[in-house]
Length: 103
Image (tube, rainbow, N blue to C red; front, side):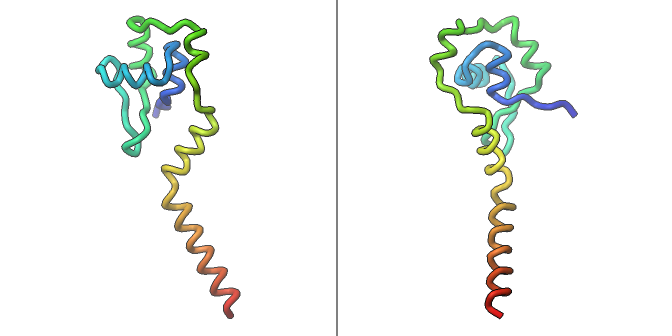
């Protein structure tokens, strides 16, 4: 199974900002797949096919675009996908601690 690219990875590969990548998806130029109804992912072969028709931004324009650090993006996605398990574990641990301490 091939690894899907994130919006950040596609933006770096195409020399665009993340907002530009999302705009390409809205225009129908690039196909993005939603995971969890929120996060866009892209097939590398489709991104490579679009690259010749995309004009990259000059590096000084990309530097002005604020970027979310990769670790924050990964943490946000982790918490989004595993929130149920984290909450369940926390509640179960609380119940176990309560039962052990209450006698």
